[in-house]
Length: 178
Image (cartoon, rainbow, N blue to C red; front, side, top):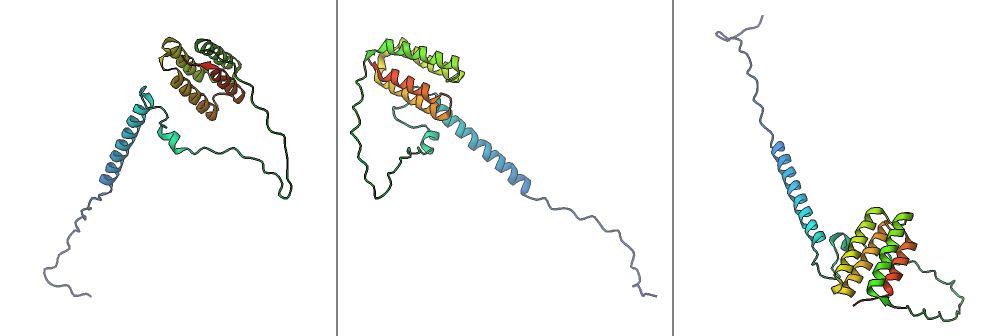
């Protein structure tokens, strides 16, 4: 038999209190910080995208971050010399009135939407820009440069077919701003 000290009674063990972990608070703080960063980013980008008075030539954040790939050039075989005739000078581009060029451009955009060369939402956007230029032709050359940039960007995105983009650029090249 075992010897038990006198007066020793059995006691029920009390449940241990669990110490709370700081992780739920850290997770909550992380979520709040993420929401604040996302809101700041959206508000900052939204302001730069909608600002009509942004300086000419200033790249938007995503444009500045994306590199432009240079066009690959075929190299002649080493050891061989290739001679070619000088390239003919490009034909002079006939100039038309600014208004006439914009009307032709609007028609070409409409045709592009009808044939599927221009995505519908991009067609609406370009038509709105052209309408604004027709209504207020005061910025002429700068507006043409912005429109050329917009067409190039949409072509890179795949919203305008390459052949339609070339046609739109040719029409704009013929325009003589007021």
